[in-house]
Length: 250
Image 1 (cartoon, rainbow, N blue to C red):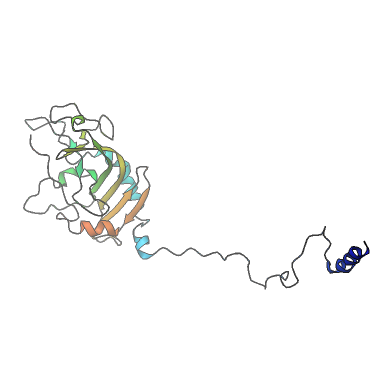
Image 2: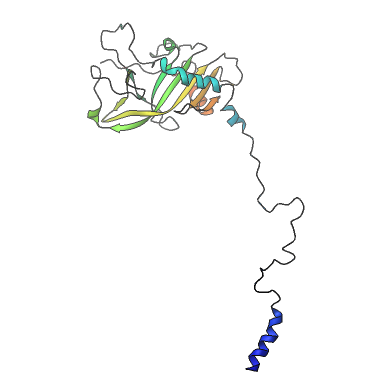
């Protein structure tokens, strides 16, 4: 019994740290960091917006885009034939949902409808000469989420009961697009695209044209020289306006 006791006495001095006290780091590790140093990851300063980003949300034009989105519902759709004094010898055709001809890009296969502040200047008929657009012209293109529906669910026009519109029952609008054996419905607003004309010499515009995009809630997400819009509208025949084909005759 004396040998185990001797071993215990010999080994005990090696335990310099009492078992009931917390262990501390060694002296080198306990040294404070050098002045000016930080133990955390340094914060990265936000980068300034690029010239392209700044040009695509030009604060000068945001109020114009917002006002267009606020007011365009009262202008009427460019292809709505309903007027106070009908001149046609048939039932006036409503505005219709149309599908973008683009196969790729942001507009590919989108359903849309166009409103114009000056509807009399909007080129519904593609004549021999381009149609000039006045300063103050504003176009708003509603873009819709499309829904594939049963063919029998779409009323035949004209003479059928007026279809439901994303803007409500008072809107003279046919939200159905018939394409071969398929029928699509413009179910709800996905956003709006705005094109408006100011004085051609206005700095920061596309020869007087300003472009913008707006969410369904009314938030302006771009305004000014929007590259994706300019790249398409530069090829338009009527200044920066394409025009659309008139409603087919029954």
